[in-house]
Length: 131
Ligand SMILES: [Zn+2]
Ligand SMILES: [Zn+2]
Image (cartoon, rainbow, N blue to C red; front, side, top):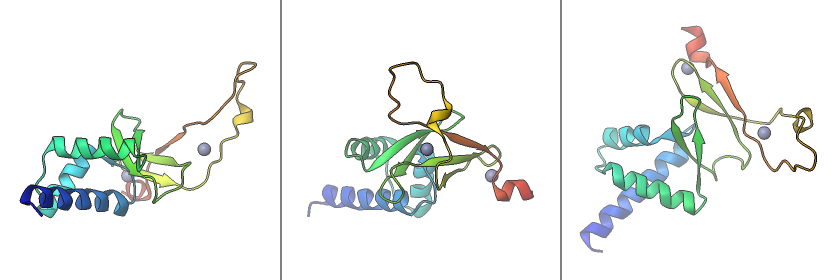
């Protein structure tokens, strides 16, 4: 295998593992930080390009945090319908099981069809609550 191809494969596998092993969605800078810490060299553009590809392949999804930060989450490791808890203090995003939302509680205009919804839970995680 040519050297450049080999490096790309290493980067791709590494990024995939970061996303799959993460307990919650990650921002681009968190991914960069993890790569840096692990000593895997890759540029910002490489990571963006990888994320774009995975988004197109529907392997990951994009989530907007309450602060407007874009986070990425591997879909296969979670359910298709997924809500998140965002900690106001440590800014960590946690996947939350279940969905307590009753769509029938909304007064949707006549003739409209609800196809999906997004809910974000915001508060303090157990670590920050204890601090
Ligand atoms: Zn927290
Ligand atoms: Zn829901």
